[in-house]
Length: 78
Image: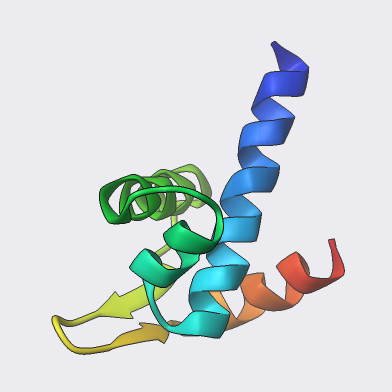
């Protein structure tokens, strides 16, 4: 079970880094073979586990929060 949890976290981190780079949950999901809904749920799960909001979302824009910027740095070196 520990390996599954680690793999889920690594997948979540990869999706987060892709979403930050691409500016879209849908595009990041497509890159990883996920639906838009699945990728959004993944980011929500990641935010809940960290206890912080990583993105400011509007219908037209996706922008990293200050915490998201810090976490992106972590994700790019992990």
